[in-house]
Image (tube, rainbow, N blue to C red; front, side, top):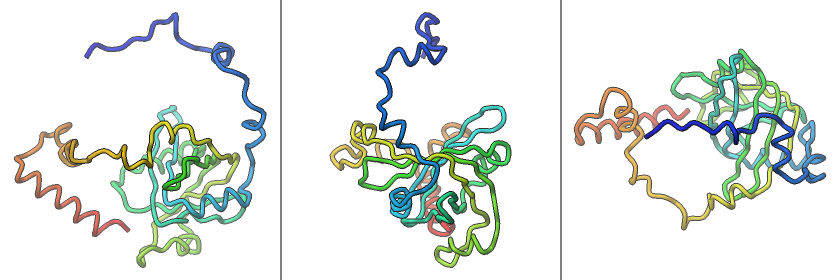
Length: 215
């Protein structure tokens, strides 16, 4: 595949040029931004089992990471503060290391079946306060730390992206078997995948690891 290079004639490089392509922002889209978690934002967060957290390091390298747990897993400590448990993962710690360098984070809360989402922007820190972590116990397992987010901006995001994508429509669900397993993809990208029989064993081992180490 040939490397793509954008024609400089069509590169948008300043805000004035950007905004000239669009209609003016609707007034409601501006005033809907809040600086705290009102009753509606709190109700949304309490229903959500999943969020994505966006971070950047000091060099501007960006990362987005999923976080999921039982419904309402994010603790609302007060109208300005959230606590997100950090569950066992692959120990790359991309999100956590980025927060140490640059505390600005963006959160996107998702509720299965809801087309609208909740966006929260704020400043994050990492804590291992036993009192906070104890509130996040699942299956008698307590997280090693929590991401505390001091809220700067909160607003609901409209449903257009989810409706365009038909995300919750079962008629648009895709068969996972049409792509290789996670382990095979990673091995293909690195050391090379083994035989089919050995690959099945490795896939089974991954599923067993999920069962043993989810919390």
